[in-house]
Image (cartoon, rainbow, N blue to C red; front, side, top):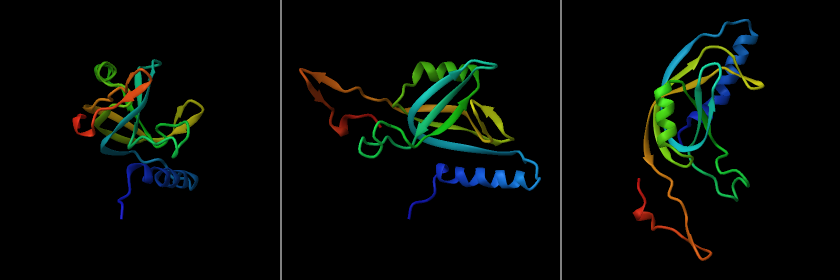
Length: 153
């Protein structure tokens, strides 16, 4: 049997928080650490009021048959707040690269994000690049790919 993943537990944790607040309880701050390895599905640099980089990480890309039009339907968003780490991330990592990251999980109340409110922040504090996306090689209308044994980790 497969063990539950981080994304499996997120909806139930959010539902428990909402029920707790409806009953008149106060939001307790929780702090935890995370360790994640996955493919970078997207990034968004937010510049105001303080810069932060939002990084979407996916456990695996989907095929066209599984999710038409979506390469990464399953993803979790992580936040990078440290200025030097943002610069390093942007200079080293591209969409499709596999990274391994560590950080903290904080549940401190509902924060506005766009037109929604989130109560959980995953702040990335370190990362390592594990593999790089190899571009497809094309020539004369043919697509060439390297044997799987030649690809990096």
